[in-house]
Image 1 (cartoon, rainbow, N blue to C red):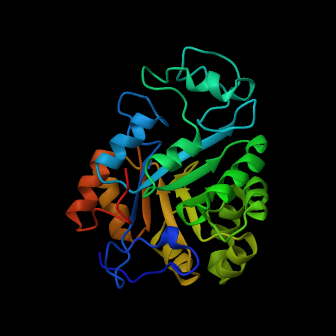
Image 2 (image 1 turned 30 degrees about the vertical axis):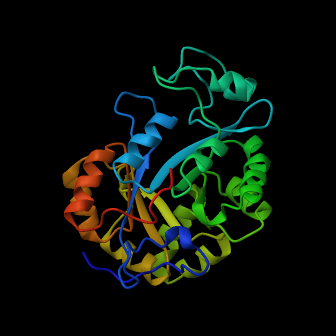
Length: 277
């Protein structure tokens, strides 16, 4: 599907995914926690696999260690994907880095991920309040505002991060703002809600508790308001094709290899800037 660019690359180049053509906006393909078919999610190895497939966008999660370092990890506790137990926040960065995540490498720091492949763009879900200040400090220190999108299920936490950042940074809505946009978009209020919330994208499931979120009409309202709509977490190729045909602006997937194939079939691959190793 050919689409005109909807993002404002002058202010939020993160969302500028034109694939070398200024007149064509490509749907974003986001590898969910990297590509981890064996379960070593959110690790350097998983990110390398995704980048090797051609991904330029990764969806990742961050929390703070006990010594205030921003670590890439999803859960509040270590139990599900490591042999250790207890909260992430009770371990130092050094201790977390020494763990094995489902047989893979240790928990990486966000700084190491940003520095390893400077061409990658990261959709970052800020998972905990204690991560707000160290995350913002890191983005400011490295000057990577154009390479990150700030996300959180908590709109309060997301706004707290944005207030600390020194330059405009792309952001996606949390649960409350997503619900408001779904309710108020039919009234023509999507642009006002988005501006007030400081968001440029919505990241939503196709359905939520039996309620259909992503419809053609909803996409039309969001696009008219200048908002991108990214759908998570889509692993079936038929669902990928159906949603892309519907006109969504991005897909988040655990099946990164499948998503790469579906986007390649649409001449939408590779994406964004080439990563620098």
